[in-house]
Length: 152
Image 1 (cartoon, helix red, strand yellow):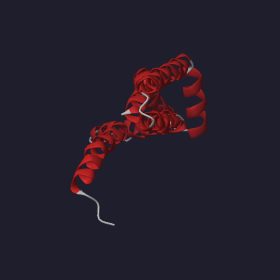
Image 2 (cartoon, rainbow, N blue to C red; image 1 turned 180 degrees about the vertical axis):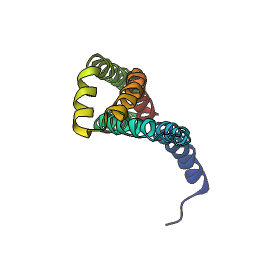
Image 3 (cartoon, rainbow, N blue to C red; image 1 turned 30 degrees about the horizontal axis):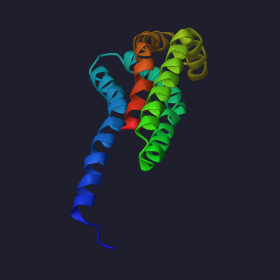
């Protein structure tokens, strides 16, 4: 079956921004690691790597915010129900913000448990904790980004 050019162009106009948006979060960690790789000590790099593992684990568990929003929105969009599309977006934003605030409120417990499982040296864990303390502030907005990406 041969696809028409407008259909392919339409698909690419939807897919490319989605692909770029999905690359944004992992690229932040890559940039951090690339910059830390130029330091004389390996401890800061190892600490950031430990904290990044914790964040990857947390965020991977909430991938349903993106995929669930996509499925529900596609269903409502297919039925041409614009009100339901908007309602799905608002409900998903509320869920993501609630989870993000919950993560932020329990950050010390999450960090303690995560670093206890990963077991780095004292200096590595200190650098990791410093990185964790900074990056945890982005948890609500990261989850909101999942919803926005899924909805779009």
